Structures are given as C-alpha cells and as structure tokens.
Length: 261
Image (cartoon, rainbow, N blue to C red; front, side, top):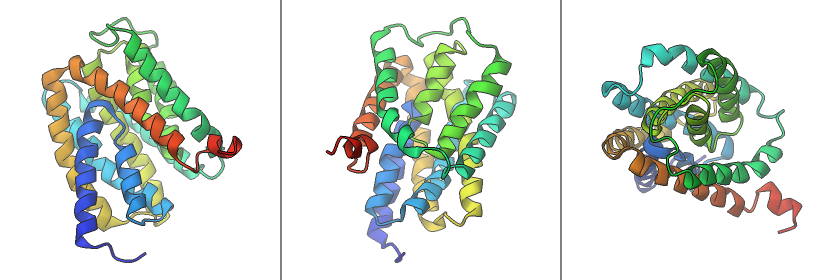
C-alpha cells in the first residue's frame, strides 16, 4: 500500500488516543481504531494485525495504571493472562476455519444483551459479590474461550470479560475493569504474535496509534478510578450498544446479506 501522509497519521493518532481513553474504562476501543484504519485505506488483514499492535499500548498502559493503585496484582494474574494469550493465538491461527459470519451475525445481539444486563441491574458490579466459579475453572475455561474469540474476531472482548468477572468471579466494576485490561493485554500479545509471523503488521501506523493509545489509556484509567462505578457502568452500556449498532450498520454484515438489505 502507499505511504500514509502526515495528516492521516495524525488522525490515526487521535483515533488511538480516543480509543485508549474509552477502552480503559469500558472496552470497545476497536470500534474506533478499526474503522479509522479502514478509512485510511489499509487492507483488512493489515488492519487486524496492526490493531493488535496498537492495542498492546492501550491495554498495557491501563494495566500498569490500575496496578500502581492496587486494583490488580499483575504477577498474581499472569497465569490467567497467559491462558488468554494462548487462546487468542489459537484463535488467530484458526481464523480462516471458524465460521466468521455466524460470529458476526450473533455478536450485536450478545452486546445488546450485555447492555441490558448492566442497564437493568442498578447494583450490578457496585461491590464484590460471591463468586459462582472457582478461580481455577474461570482461568482454564472462561478466559481461554474469550481469548480465542479475541484472536478470531475481537470486537466486544472487553465487554465479555467484564461480564465474566462480575457475574462469574464476583468482582466489583472497578476491580473487573482493572483485571479485564490485563487479560486483554494477554490476548493482544497472543494474537499479535501470530499476525506478526504472517507479516500482517504495519509498524509505523501501529506505533503512532499505540502512542495515542498509551496516553488515552492513562487518562481513561485515572478517570475510571476517580469516578468508579458511576462512570464505568454507563460507558459500558453505551459502548456495547454503540458497537452493536456499528456492526449492524456495516453493509457487509451477514444479517444484511441474508435479509437482502
């Protein structure tokens, strides 16, 4: 592809900055970065690979910020992050085998379901609750599945992890947000390694957007820690609904094709 101009790179930096801020609080940064790269004329495969590179900066930056304030123990959560990475690597390898159209068709409705869950439960995730799944089962069963999904497709991964941490592991919203970012970092590493091996990473674009992601994630995580559940829950609901709408609005979405729209 042709070399991107300075103006385009600056716009991609801004997209990374905004995505990092939102993603550090409620997830959904990919709904900003992926369309931005596609509009810049980057081929789809390179978009997926480069998105994983720049996402590393956002999820890594947010993880460090939450860890510094005691909301997540990075060393203690490392084994769980590794299972997310392994799942994502496998997902990236098998991306051409998994029925992507089925995933794309069902995802908007899953995201809307998550938004309804958090929107209709006033106390959802306000404080830590009784866990419904042991830590070992959560790490070996739930986390790799979400990591696999992140490698194979990706949008909504943060929302799914948040839902799991709150409804299965019994975490409060802020604690769930902090742990979601570190597991998302792990899944980004796993998928990125595979895309890198296949030469699907544009380093200049990824590093420019990644620097924006890093700054945005620092700002977003600090904002979330200051405001707590009061801001996390509304943004989580908004991000889930917005991502669902964007996916359904895509002319290439399978439902539009199947329904002849």
